[in-house]
Structures are given as structure tokens and as C-alpha cells.
Amino acid sequence: MNTTKILTIYFCLIISQLSPSCQPDTKEKRLNIFAAASLKDVLTETAEAYKKETGIKLSLNFASSGILARQIEQGAEVDFFFSANKDWISYTTEKNLLDKHSVLKLARNKMCIAVPKESHLQKLTQMDRSKFSSLFNGRLAIGNPTHVPSGKYAKEILEHHELWKDLEKSILPCKNARETLLMIEMREVDLGIVYLSDAKKSKKVRCIYEFAEKSSSPILYYSAHRSTSNSKLLDFQKFLNKTESKEIWEKHAFIVND
Image (cartoon, rainbow, N blue to C red; front, side, top):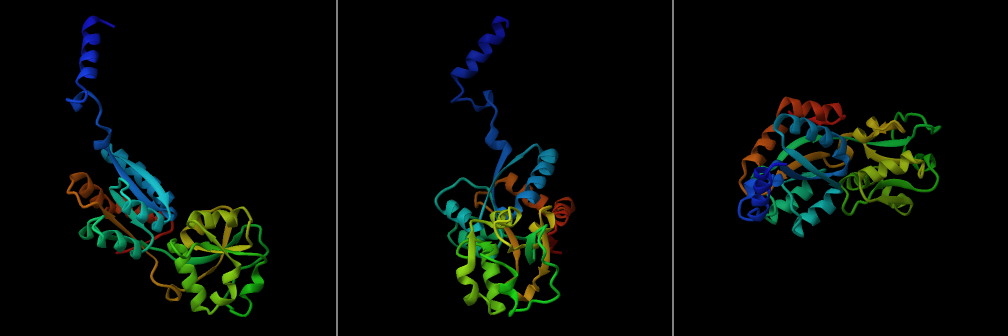
């Protein structure tokens, strides 16, 4: 290495705190995304497409919507929040943690009964309240209804069919939608109530019954971004409305809103 290159590197190291241009500004090329666990596949593919188009990396953090909302409230650095229901988006915007004007309704989903692929249970033609408990031994896996949207929907469905009181003690509450699916895949339970999108993409489970949408509150996915005005935020918001982005959601079995 010649003397000129050595001096240049040394100069940049000395004044790096004063001159950011001497070092790559990784923060400018990244967006921090907090997203519901059920969106892992769709947003991982979205991140790949977006980086290819813009060079900007989406740093993805997945958990239950409720846990993520609490993290945002506690000061976690976030640019976009994707929630599996409107309640947690409203929670963050009402506290002015995210921009209420940026809320975007992205897609909807359905809930279903899923069983391990090798299960002897066949597809159900109807929801028979009197026979439901005989479908499984042990526990019924759902998301934790206190903070996991999929669990909240599952509880609403069981209440709709007048089953919650009878089955409450048999519930296995999982920390997010993906853990619920995992419990079924690993045959820790005979069945569970999960998002239809999760059941469809898993090679280890089968959907034996799709619940009518009227049996729970609407299963809708929303996004919102932080309040600080930033062109990168607006550009990604526009990308989410593009046909390319919507096709990714549809590929992963979500129902894209018109």
C-alpha cells in the first residue's frame, strides 16, 4: 500500500466523528421493520424485492403485534410497524408513537383448524359444537389471546361457537402465530387454530376447516410508520401499494384489499 493511501485512511479515521462521509452511512440505507410473526415469509420476500429495486435494506424484527407495540412504546427504534390487527396500530398512533396519517390497510386473512399432516382427521364439512372437543386429546393450540391477534381471533371464534368456556382450560397459549403453527407441526398438539396463510404454506400441516369470516372480527393487516417526515418512509409506503408488492402477499395466501 503506497504512502498516499495510508495517509488517506489515517485522515478518515481521525476525523470520522466530524465527517460521516468518510465512512458508510448504513443507517441511511436501512429501514427498521417491526412485524407480526405471521408476516415473516411475505415480508422477507418483500425485503428482497425492495433491496433489489432501491438498495435499501429492511431490517426485520418479528414477534406478536402486542409485544412489538409495547417495545415501540418503550422506545425501540422503528421505522415501520406491521400489525395483524387494527388494535395495536391504534395503540401506537393514539400515543403518537407512529403517524396516524400513515396507516395503511394491506390485506386480510382467514382462520382455520390445522392438524399435523399425518393426522387421521379428515376435512370437516361443518363446525359441530357437540363433537369439537372429541377431535383432540390434550390441548388446543392458539395464540395467547391477551396480546397475540391470532389468539384473539381464535378466542372470538370459540366464543362464537359457544365453546370457549368448555375449552378454556384445554388451551395451549402460544407467544405468537408462528409458535402456534410450530406446535402443530411438531405434533405437540392434535390440532390448533391458525391463520389460513400459515397453514397453506406449511408442508407439515393440513387445514381441515376454514372458519367463516363472520365468526370473528375482521382479520386485517395494517402498517404505519414513524412520525418523522422522511423520503425513505414515503418511498417504501408507495412500494407497498405497488402491484409487485401485492403479488407477493397473494403468493403467500393473503387476500389483498382492492
